[in-house]
Image (cartoon, rainbow, N blue to C red):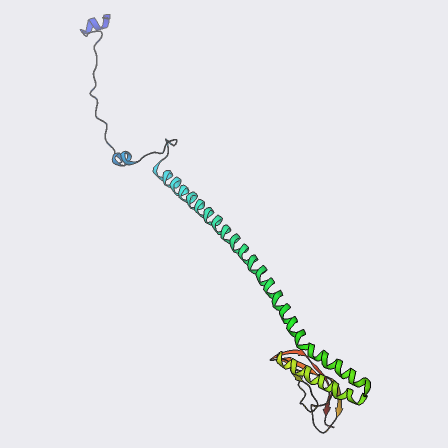
Length: 205
């Protein structure tokens, strides 16, 4: 004891004890028990975790979109290959059809060649027979054109139509827009002009 303690009658090493009060529980204790902090982020709160989860969802969606984009590219590649094959087949079929058309037209014109040869042979011995022979050839050519769907237009006496006829000259006449001379016969196929007729047209006074 010190001298002062001895004088006051107090022990030198008196232990003073304090009653420990229990810690108060917070209202969020239950929430803290349910909340699982992701590994590697010990200080992350619930709001930050929600943002991370949202970002992860977007990344997952981006990955799905990337896979979908790759699938679309594959499909597009297959469609392009199919179209290329279709175009090649169509080109071959078109070429074959054109070849058949040329062959058919040539076959139709062969009798005309035969008629021309006969007309020339007859004209050598008798020139007067040459004109009827040429006229017969002309008639046969027109009949062949008709079988191909061609229609002649622009004959003398027809009414001038700028859709089918080309006026190379206008002369005075008794009627307006009448074809008086045909320099070149025209041909049409339905509503499509194949070749315009070149004609001379009359015009009153």
